Image (cartoon, rainbow, N blue to C red; front, side, top):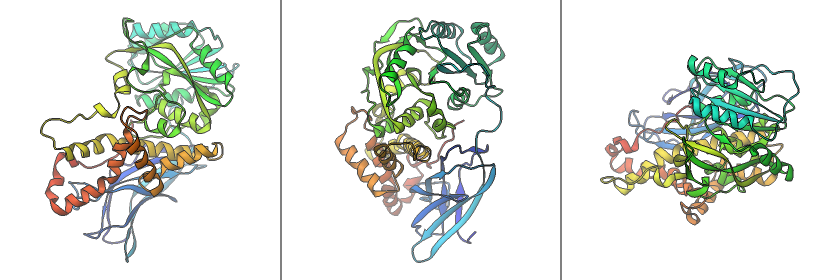
Length: 472
């Protein structure tokens, strides 16, 4: 470690990082060398190197106000568990490189800990249904289970991964599924969140299954849902995933919206747009089971969801098919993980301008609280998809992932983003998120000028430190 370089990492994962076929992880922190301006900042995890996509971010609690950074580090597959050093490297013009070790990280080939479920030795089903539960509403859960039992495609089994529900809820789940051997319940000993619960359910899918469907705990499927989605995949061998429309209803079954697409555009043809603003909901889709190898383990980042990650991997391998018929009821209630309003409102309403907030501060608020998590999610998922699909993805889709993975570090990616931001509004399929990302990438220049003119202004809440939250 070179004397003089001060580096700090906000959070390193306490649990081992499951790398699988490769995974990208986000690292945020602060680094400075006195008052010397740093030319480049990189994070090294073992032999993997990730260049900072954002630097000179405000860190009011640090000795240097503009010492914050965010970097994405792509980790290649490992064959055995290993502890590797985490190093921050900075380059100074005319003075070479300076390094500081900030910790260690344990890398493992696959998730450790509690096994998801035993692999049964019976013939694998045509469709494996992966349901994630946590303290489900008894009435809505019973309706969902009944609608799965009523499917006209009869060759299915449903793996229910429960995320640490109360003993009363687990008893209710067992009572509802009864002695139906097509349902396999696997309770977890502790809660780990929606993303990891679906990951756990997907890991249960047996070899030999042809298709996988995600299921929420509180919807209602039409009897021909699985059959219609399977027909869409059978009709197009190049399609990797099929998804459908849905009705939005309240818990009493009253229709609130006859289609999911009443508040935004639906699109499934462009990988880059899907990566920015996903249109595939988990409960609406059926995908080919051989995608599971590239999907697992799920990459972790703030704002990551299993359905967006699944849609991206499917799009990286081929086409997506859309069935315009509403094949399930999307039930809205107070316990929804993500409701229809949140999924369809887009960027335009997440941070409305309030009286007393200057336009400059409003723009930077959007960059900090909306665009930063989006940029981290896009980079983590795009770079992970690159690692896992580099030998199986068509050339055009590899090019799209290359553009996405270079945001903040590659000039071609920034110019591509600028072109989209200038030509597409908030009513476009990506909800105008390109503009917010472009503002974020230019943020460092705005902050640099503010620091030179009025450094005390950076201590205002609007310029709060940029950190990368961790998925639970």
